[in-house]
Image 1: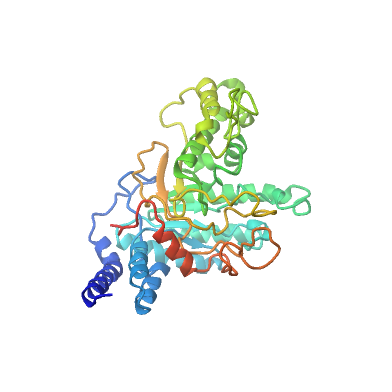
Image 2: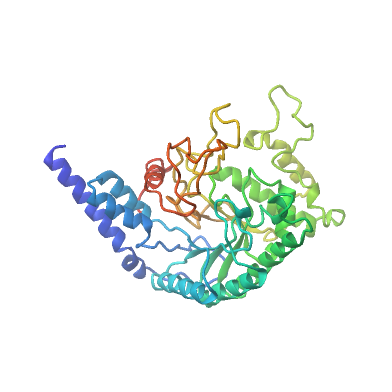
Length: 426
């Protein structure tokens, strides 16, 4: 590389790293966002200038990897959620308080994830959680106390509602007591966090390729979502933003339809059409017209059902939602047909993915309050083996890092593959 070109690149990276390190000071000079309960298009989210991406930028620069160092500096400048996954009540209160204080000083809104529900992740890659419902409620009380009335966004328990104890296996919850406790714990978390006054609370609701519309609508109602600001979709997943926006709109409409809609429909979320629906199942009566839950072009029957039976709900009557766009820039990953005989774990450290739409509260979609990077880009999903029975992830040829561990190679790939192209936040 010519010396002049090298000097230019080094200069650019130094400038990028300086900008990243100075992000807190820059934010602190911005106009404060007005205090509010819910998000508005004017809300600006907090980016931690000392996060893992910033540390990776410095490591890459020391190693002479100029291109990746610049990308990691750009990544570090973008707002990302902070996950709280363990600790005593005193510990979580202190950590939450520290984050909220830093965000307040910078006149930004932090995004937090509460992830400590008992029996978390069915004892799989992200297993853990509080030892009991009583312990969890004390932890949530402390979490809320850490926010202490300041402005914040909280995503409540990713997968906690879409993967209930009764779905962890036939021996996990034979009496249904654990599932009932899970629902009650989630409702407690929603109410407690909303009681803070200025916290926007979104209860996780899986993604467009998981639960049917009516099923998820009922789960949200059971778990107290009507007392929240809404729900969260696509956390730690890669499904396209527009697919989740359609799915979320149907869920919100279904919740209204079964609670405030036609009298005959009260309590009947099970009547709602979904992403698998066709009035002429299994196809719409035309060659090649079968319904696909992954292809919105085939969702016309679902839209028609809601138009006919739900109509147009009153303005302001529907729950809103947020979408995780941290890894969906290139959409979902589908392995080659026949490549794996077992579960390919398409959600797990999906290869070839990229960062998606930047975090923003100005989505332009009425029910979508924000695009957020809830899953921290560059953190592993766990040891994915694609149903092979081994320990190595065949897509990468290595043993994947444990869930939540920083994975530089994945962070670099997500940044390089970003759609739209990765730039500095502001």
